[in-house]
Length: 248
Image 1 (spheres, rainbow, N blue to C red):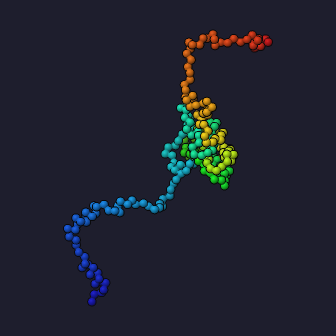
Image 2: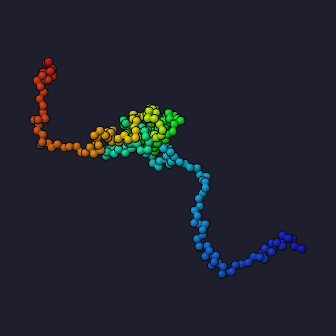
Image 3: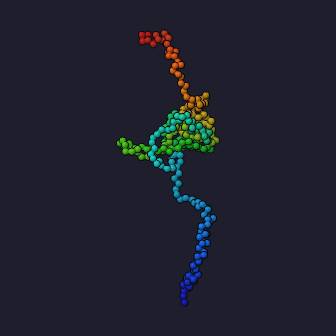
C-alpha cells in the first residue's frame, strides 16, 4: 500500500496536460493587447530618499565652478527693477552703496525682525538669496596654490535694492522699529520704504519732476561756433582785484 502523500503527488502529475498549438495565438493576442492596469501610472505613496531641499540662505546644490568675487549689478541702462514693493506693505532698502552680504548677516537680520514682531500676525518676504560662494585661504598662506576652500554663502545686493518686505496687521511705527533693528545687523545704510513709493534709478528717486524719460534723455550738445570766446570771459571788478593782490 502506497502512502497517501505519494498518491496525491501522482494524482497531480496525471492531471498535468500539454497545451495544443491552437491556444498559443490566443495567448499572444492577449499579451499584445493593452491592459487597463498598464494605463494607470505607478505612484509611490512615500519616498525613503532624503530630500536635500535648500532655502534662501543655502542653495540646493553646490557650485559646479567656483564663483569669482565679482560685483553687484549696476543699473547703467536706467533700470529700476527691484527697488519697489511687490508683495508687502513695508520694506527695507539699501541706500548707500552696493556690497556683498553674507548669509549669516541676513539670517541675523531675519531673526531680529521675528523677535521684534513676536506675537503679531504678519508675513515676511525675502527679496534676495545667498547663492554666491565665498572662498578663502587660511592665514599665513603663501601666494598661489589655487583659489582656496569654501568659506560661506553670500548675496550680491545692488544699491537701492529691497531686501525684506513685510505684510500683515502691523502698525507702521512697529514695522519701522523692526527694520531699524534689522538694519543695525546688516552692513551699510538702509531706509524704510512703503507700498506706493516711487522707484529708484541708481541713487536718484523718481518723482517731483524727475522721470525715467528725463534721465534717459541725452545731454544737449552746444556747437562750438555758436558761443563767442569774448562773452564767456568775465572781468573781475577793481575792488576784487585790489583785495586779491599780495600787497594789500
